[in-house]
Every structure is written in structure tokens, then in C-alpha cells.
Image (tube, rainbow, N blue to C red; front, side):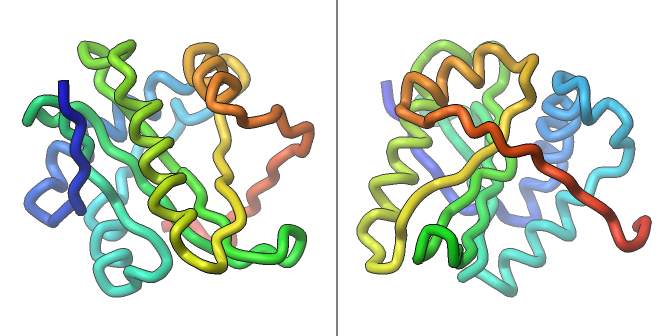
Length: 154
């Protein structure tokens, strides 16, 4: 079985929108999100590739999911961190090692960059499968609480 990744393009926007809304509907804390910003996200990362990307995840040549990743400098850790903003695998493709393979490939790719120091991600406490996955990949549970205050509604 083979897993591959490619940069998302504007022609992927419809599939990405469908999958991201599936993700938001699965995660209790995001059920209120009605507007999808996939096109704006793809365009942003096309213009600012050093800050992150949207990746399509294919399994045996079939679209199985996607991930949105970002990069930032961390004073606390003394280098670049890559963050997984969203990682979604369609239900029919889950439990095939696709998410594990993706996270490991991302880590291996970023490790080759001289300033890379780690990877950051968040998961809803009720997302038991995702939390088990991240623990199995060696991510320690972080006791920090995340806060987001939006400056304007789009």
C-alpha cells in the first residue's frame, strides 16, 4: 500500500471544502464553524510558501485526506516548529496507518532543515483516535490551554 502527498491547488478546493467541513462536524468544538476558507488558505500558502502549505494525502492513488501545516520560530524552543493545523483522513481510509505515515514523513522532512526543532499539534480531548495516535507517535500530552481571540469576523 502506498501513501503519497502533493501540494493542494485551487482545483482541489471543492474536495478540500467537503473534507474540512467533515472534520469540523466531527470535532465538537468546531460545530459552529459554518464558513469555509479553503480557497483563501490555498492562495495564502501559494504566496507565502515558507510559512506552510496545504497537502493532499493520497492512498493507492485515491484522495484519502488532507493536512494544513504551518511553520513558525519559537523563542521558547530555540528554532523552527512545524505545526499541524488540520489533519483529516476520510473514514473509509482510517486505521490503515495513513495519518501515522504522514506525521512521520513530515517529521523526517522537517528534520533535514537546520533550524527545525520540533512539531506542534492540537487535538480535541474527545477525539480519542487522534489522541491515541499522537501518544503512540511519542507526543507527550501538553497541559497548556490554548486561547484564541479573533480581531474581526470575516
